[in-house]
Length: 149
View 1 (cartoon, rainbow, N blue to C red):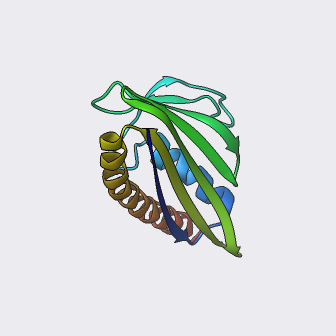
View 2: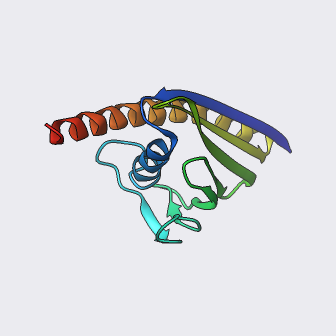
């Protein structure tokens, strides 16, 4: 078995709690793409989303939220054919007031080929979703500011 790890970060102009809520709404429930929608197979806890399971589009893979520390950190696992062990962690760290660093780390253990394909392709996916998330949060800020006028 071969282990692989991918980690990417962005900084957003909101506090950790709002960054967490935006990640749940956008990256988890909308699959990280504008107008996206995840296929939720199990709702999990309605307040924390712990235990929420989603099916990845076009595959038999399932992801489940296994740890939720609201506004701070969440973890999820992936169950899919050919993947022995996979876990992702997303950390929301306030780096100054009103600014949060979101760090998304995924770790996999599988055969050499799957691990290398995953490491290469998932790095690009995380980059795209984090970029989309940053735009999503920016639009949320503009909408809130506009509604306050």
